Each structure stands twice: as structure tokens, then as C-alpha cells.
Image 1 (tube, rainbow, N blue to C red):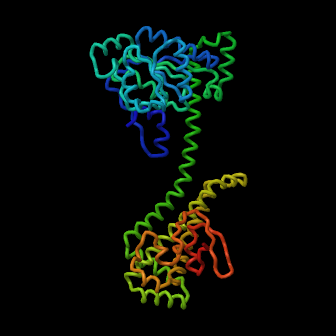
Image 2 (image 1 turned 60 degrees about the vertical axis):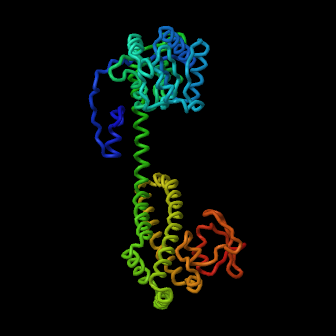
Length: 432
């Protein structure tokens, strides 16, 4: 349930398959939402805002000023100080008092400056807390909570959330947005057109123009930005779905491995045996007989789990690279998403092939004597137990992405530690 979902109705339906149903308020909304005040400069806007707050403070009406950033908080605070208006500034410096400051924003002569996102979920009661009927009626007679927005946000939902701080449960209230032609939203969308209109009037910088046409222009600009961001999120989701399907498949296999699913173990072992040559099959079966069924299965699960995890990490790196480069295909009149899906499928099939081939290689080259001499077959780092020496001589521990040097006879190479298992199984050792 949300109070501002109507403006994002299309996204809720297209992305999540959810319909948005608008429920009427329990009590009629008594809040007055004024049309935006448009100023030529930010300085003129801030001066006019401070003067308005001064008048409201002298009257006693509580004021909540919503800004788009902490920097704006500080700027507004400096203008209020110049006017001699006592106020609270809600930002990262006093976040521990956030709920308390917002809850008391309905008191007489209260002035609170906060970012639009601060204190959400805290109900602002007229008169403050604890509730006092006399204070409540007094603030109500003054017009309720007066909410001021220092500029329009890119998303209408944020503006609506700020407006919704006032006029709760049928209480009176008023909201007003102060906008300047130097604000990002106005400057990017239609600022020149509005500037031309105001320029012809010859207004000073701290005098505003208020017209429904301009307010509609701003709302139209917000709708355009929301549409742009929605298309971006929808596009990102389409790419994420490709990797999500693969992730679900890998995690399902991991669950079966960790739970010791005998049916899965048997199917994988059968697939391994089918791809082995006759001499490898004999070697595979002889090592199985030497270790016995229980120990063999334990070792097999450790090997396949370690190999799967390593290959999955490499696959994620490859998919990330493909995602960052696939957009170039559009120059060849190809759909980047289709290309990404095709390449992702090919890479995942390669992962499955490599999983079987590497596990088959490791299992046919097991050091059974070392395994039988170690009763702790099932360990936190299975490959160290199964394959053998991974730098235990010095007791050194390596990070997954740390580069190590491995040697085999006169050969030497440098690789990441996470890829070392397959080489150790083939007779390589880590160089100290």
C-alpha cells in the first residue's frame, strides 16, 4: 500500500504485473495545493521564500520546508538566519533526532528544514506531541501545517509525498512550491520558453509569476523524465532477467549438492562417465572402488561444488563484460538485448561443459593415498583436502582474486588463486 502509487501506475503494471487501485480518503482532503511560484533566479526564489516563512512564523503557523539535497538545507538555513527565524535543520548531522524533529513540526511557530526523504513514516500532528486538544485547535485555526517545496523533484511521487505531509486525516493545511528558472528540471525542460515569457514582463528577480500553464509545463517535464527513467529501468530489468535465469539454475544445483541429493549425484556421475574414454573409465572406477561409495560421494560433492563456484564467478565476469560491450552491436543493426541473450546462452552452455570436463579430470587424477590418510574429507575448503597441497607448507592464506605463481618442472605461470585448483590437479604447485 502506498499513498503515491498512482503516478507510477504504468510501471507497476508493466514491470511487476500489479494493478494500482485508488482508494478514497477516509475524510475529505482540506489541504490547499497552491500553484507553483516561478522566479527568474535561485537567489530571488530564496529571498522570497525567507520572507514568506517570516510572515508565517510571525503568524504562528508551523512550516515544513522540503529540499532536494543537504546542500539546499544549508542554503535555506542561512537565509532563515538572516531573517532571524529560529528553525531546525534536519540532515545527516542530527539524524538521531530525525523522528523527534519531524514529529514536533506541527507545533506553533515551528520551522523545520528537511530533505524530501527525511522523516518519512512519522505522522506530523498539529500542535505537536504529546497531543493537546487546545494546541491542536489553535494550530488548526492558523491554517494547519504549511509545507514549502524549494524546487520540483524529477519524480512526481516525491513531490506528492512532500505535499502529503500536510492536511493529514482531514486537517487543514497548505502547500506551495517555489521554482526558479535556474532549477535543473526547468532549465532542461522548457526553461527558455518560460524565461522568455517572464522576461517580457520585466519582473524583478524576487517577484514571482503564478500561472496554471507553467505548473502544467513542469508536470509535463516531470512525466517525461519519469518515462525516461522507466524505460531505463525496464531495459535494465530485461538484461537482469537473462542472468537471473542462469543464477536460479546454478543455485538449484548448489542446493542439490549441499543437500546430498543422490539422484542428482548419480545423474552427474553418469554424464561424466559417458564422456570418458575407456582407459579413463577404468581409472575412474578403480578410484571409486579404492575410496568406497561414501567417501567417493563426499569427495565428488566437494569437487563439483568447488568447481561450480569457481566457474560461476568466471561466468559472472564474462557476462558483465558482454553486458558492457553488447550495445556496440546496435551499429550493425542488431538488437543488443537479443545479442546478449544469445551470447549469455552460449557462455552458460560452455560453463556446463567445462564443469563436467574439469570435474572428470579432477576425479580421474585424485590422490587416493592422501585422501585415505586424511579423515577430515569434508572440510571448509574441499579442494585443499581433495587435490592436495595449496600452499599449506608456509601456512599462507590467499585471497580469491590474489595472483599466485605456479610451477610445473621448468614451466611457470601467474594466475588468480581462484583458478588454481584445476592446475594443482594436473601436477602444478604454488611457488612460495
